[in-house]
Length: 68
Image (cartoon, rainbow, N blue to C red):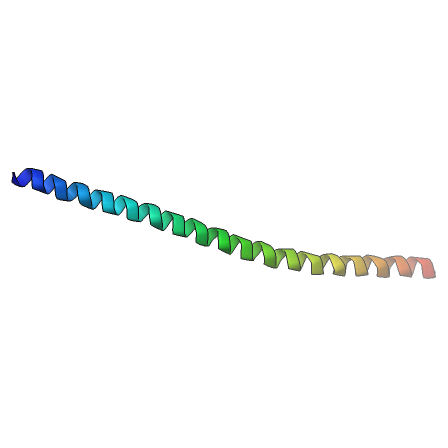
């Protein structure tokens, strides 16, 4: 009787730990997706600024060529 009770307790603990692990994995996935979105949004804005700077540099170079 004592062994079956021990197996029951171990089984219950295993189920609780398994469900907890799955919940933590889902939480980490959601947090990772949120972090990736923040990173992508920041880089998208940075790329726009960089593209504008490159356009202005190319316009300056073109302007120098037409003056001479």
